[in-house]
Image (cartoon, rainbow, N blue to C red):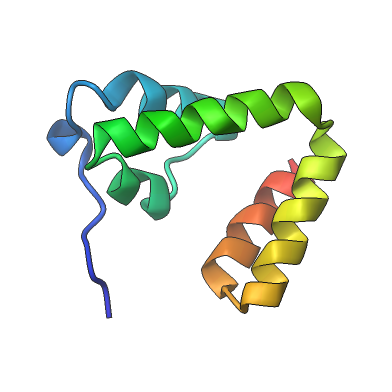
Amino acid sequence: MARTAALKPEQVPADSKPTLDTFTKNIGFTPNMMASFAQSPIAFNAWATLLGSLSKALDVKTRDGIGLAVSEVNGCNYCLTVHSFTAEH
């Protein structure tokens, strides 16, 4: 059961739009999690900043491995699917 809805492109707050557009461009689609998270520009942009910092400290293979491992430990099929997709691409 969904607790929040993924925003349609026209519903994304102006302060979240550049960050969401960058994610969409980089991975080729907009995951529902990001489209939902974008409802809170402060939290969404802070999370994006954290990811940006991690991308400078960890190589892609390591980040993908961490994402897959955490998703599996948490039993989150949605996250596992997203991290599997990004690891393949």
